[in-house]
Length: 139
Image (cartoon, rainbow, N blue to C red; front, side, top):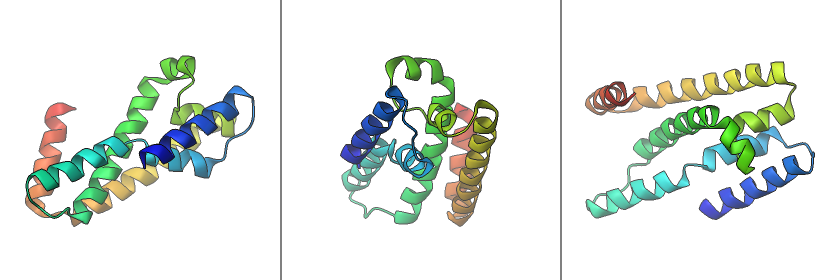
């Protein structure tokens, strides 16, 4: 997934640099791939603990990581533009005019939050409670 993310990031940023449009499907795919390093670390953690990876947990974590990536991109927008690196808001601004870009990004975030809540509800109660508590403490 890492090499796919990097290739897609380079292509999308190159398109922006040459004033070419980008496709929303590719932007959404890229932001979903962006946390590939966390997924690798999660798999290593399972292996280190001698456990079989739990796909339900990993799918939940990938959606949680997606929300973190979106948040980071909003915070880092100016730096990311200056460095010509992938930034989901930057990509949405390329796809839509500035007013609509924000609304479209809000809609995308709402759909990710819905998926997050649905996956959170599927976790065992104790795990979901501990995860929510950890988020409250750190955020």
